[in-house]
Image 1: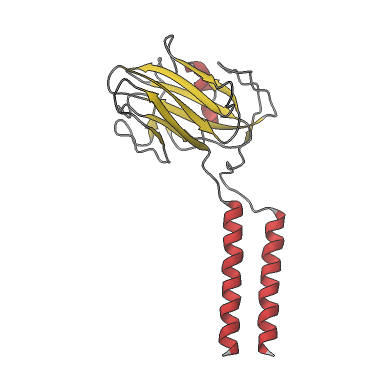
Image 2: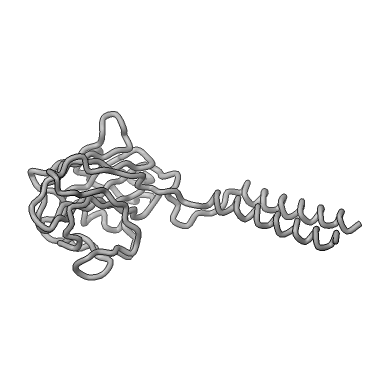
Length: 227
């Protein structure tokens, strides 16, 4: 009986250690949420998308040119915690210089017909810069690294009657006022280092110590029970 009990204790210890590792390595949501606060009764909502994109129109896993055709505001996370190697020009906020570590996110508003909305999107880190023009978005597509096909029509980005800005109180929030038809409105938001943003998280050294300690403790307990 002791032998069976010791085996059970050993495997329970392994499971407990594994759960600690996965919880330490797991990535939280990077876009934390958002909302449409006014859409004239169109019934739109904010949705965080997962990859690959389930766009309704156009090539699968693509964005940028009438690929959703819905009154919703969408967002998805791009490359996280990447070091900028050259100066990046921003339309809103300061330019980003080489050596800065940023996380990238894409915001989409692609209604079927002409529609205006106001709303916001929250992130898990302060917003550094926003790209709103065709050129700055094209220049930062290398930050994507998502497998998504980024369509780049001449009107990609925002037009003169659209606006996006960093909230003056909640620095991790981008407020938007979009009026769009075809091909839609799109912005790229660059935030500071994202705590939950490691795409391929590696356990901290302390996690490995915990693993070793857990295995050692389980083995020691099993040895004692055998005596």
